Length: 277
Length: 71
Image 1 (cartoon, each protein chain N blue to C red):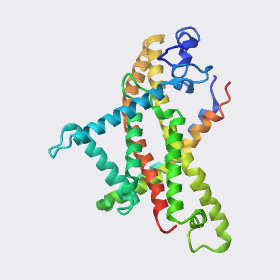
Image 2: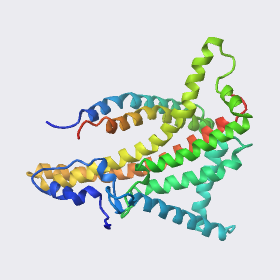
Image 3: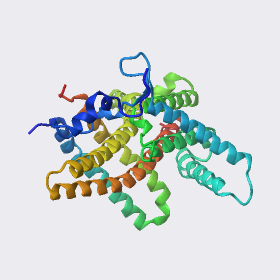
Image 4: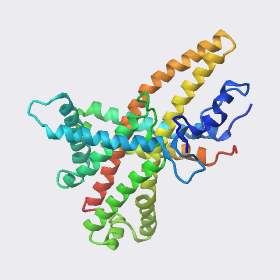
């Protein structure tokens, strides 16, 4: 068992290859495999994203428990931050999408999803952590599974049984020959496409964003330090500068992805609780 | 010249969703400019549409790595 804080393939000569005659090694999906304990050959590994996820749960829990413990009419800075976040999820996501009648019981789920994803995504650009947890597919899959189970369970309860739920997938007033085709399409949407895209969107955005930052920063570093002429070195400097700009763009994307994931979860739940269709 | 053709294919495939997302936000900005009080409702619709359109690009990105031919 070895303790390491860099991607696994760096230790197997990756850095040497970058510095040696073989030239620049483009960043790949291997840059996302960061085991702290264990390796690819051992039966289990405690990786960096799992550490970030555990830390995020502790930090978010500590933040909200301490804020709720000392609520005051004139809010402190921390209470203000917590209230703004809470209001944002409650009013512009839950109440607007699910509707004023039913949104209250889904608020804990949506709040948890939003803050967990937002915090873990922002870890992708926070110095010394700089690893978006959601760029490992397992984390989005688990979050999506929770949403998937919730919206199907709610729909089956609200529409009185599995059969009625399946019937309600077809919109009313269609000609008879169209009904089987429509049922097939709607079934595919509700049971396969929705969860698949929900998980892959978050995963894909985080993976692509982090990969892009790696390209600009590692590529810029390589051009700057190993470039043969002054022009190549200058373009490396430009690449590094653009990497900094893209980091701020990533901050926006990371927040937006947390928002979209929560919004879509709310949208699927609102489809489940609505009476018609 | 060495490289992987799947990335080129993904670049081409991203054109379509790019245009689609552009159209959606153009319509959203138009709608808000004409009727600013409808902003909240339009925002939900716009982001839903964007999520659906963007899903195609995201699937493409995943397929790049799935069909990666380099060993």
